[in-house]
Length: 340
Ligand SMILES: Nc1ncnc2c1ncn2[C@@H]1O[C@H](COP(=O)(O)OP(=O)(O)OP(=O)(O)O)[C@@H](O)[C@H]1O
Ligand SMILES: [Mg+2]
Image (cartoon, rainbow, N blue to C red; front, side, top):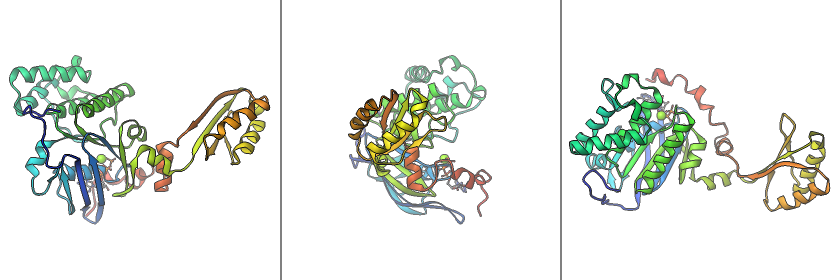
C-alpha cells in the first residue's frame, strides 16, 4: 500500500507489524492490562476479543503511543514505541471509541482538513473526501455539520478520516459497535479491502461473529490477560468436537430420532425447547453417513441436518468459564472511572 508520501512503506522488520511483550497498565490499584503479549504479522487482520472492561482499549492505546505502558515493550514494524514514538505515529492510524473530528464542520470539510493536514493538495483532498464519503455511504449527509450525525454515521466518518493516510497499520477499536447490519457489512468489506491492498489491521471487538468473519488470528482477553490465542479454527478446535444439528419433519418422531442419534453416535443428545431440533456433540464427522442411513431405515424424514464447528461464543465460554457478556455486570462501575 502507498502511504501519503507515495512511497511503499519500508519497515525495519518486514514480518511483524506488532510485537508486544509483557504489557502492563495499572490505573490506581486496578490492573487493567496484566502482562499482554501480542504478535501481529504484517498484512493480516488480527482480532482482540473480549468483554467490556477486559482491557482492549487500554492495550490499543499503549500500542499506538497514546498511553505509556507501566511495564513491557512494543515494537511496531520493528520500531520501539517508547524510543521512536514519532516514527511509529507515521506508520499507524487509530480510530475508535474517541471522536477525532470537529463537530461544527461538515463531513466533507472534516475530511478535507484531515487530507490537507496530511499533505495532500487541495484538489487531491477534495477528491479523497468525495471518494471516502461515497465509500462509506455518507454522500447525502456530506454537507451536514457533524453535530447532526447519528452514532453510526460518526463512526463511519471516523474510519473514513483514518483511511486518508492509508497507514500501513490501522488500529480499529470496536469499528462496528452500534452500526446497523448493512453498514456493519460495508465496514467489513472496507477492512478486508484495506488488508488486500497491503495494510495490517488490529481490531477489537465484543462480537464473536465479527472476529470469526474477519480475523486471521484472534487473542481472547479477559481481565487484562490473553487467555487464548490462535486462528479462529484453532480456537474452535480447542473446544473439541463438532456438533450435529438435526431437525425432523414430524414432531412425533422426535424420541425415535433421538434414540437413533444416540445409538449411532454413542453420545448424549439434547432436544431444543420447541421440540423439533436435536443437537449432539460429534467426535467424528464421518459418522454422519451412518446416521443418515440409520434415520432412513427408521423412516424418519429430515427437515435439516448440519455438522458445525462450535461457535466462538462456545469457545469463549469454555476458555473463560463464563459467557462473553458476563464481565459487563462486574465492570458496570467503570464509566464512573473511580479507581483510586
Ligand atoms: N483512564 C482510565 N482511568 C482509570 N481506569 C481506567 C481508565 N481507562 C480504563 N480504565 C479501566 O481499565 C479497565 C480496562 O478498560 P478498557 O477500556 O481497556 O476495557 P475495554 O476492553 O476496552 O472495554 P470496552 O469493551 O467497554 O471498551 C477497566 O476496568 C476500566 O475501568
Ligand atoms: Mg474499549
